[in-house]
Amino acid sequence: PLSSFDFYCQLNHDADSARSNDAATLKVTMVAWLMEQTPRPEPVIQSHDKASCGFNHDVTGQLLCPVDYNWEDAS
Image: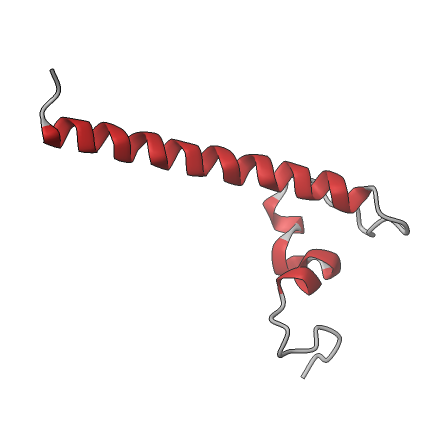
């Protein structure tokens, strides 16, 4: 039988694995959804290329921008 500590460690490990799987799946799903929109984002968003996502891309940057700020305002 597992000790309480070993059980806790296994439970924590499994929770961490589930979170990383969810994050990876979410990224691929979001990119697929964004690329189905009309008009399509330019440049094309690729789920495997971190450099072209996030705040580096106008479409994903707008989605990440807090509502108190205007993404279109460069100042």
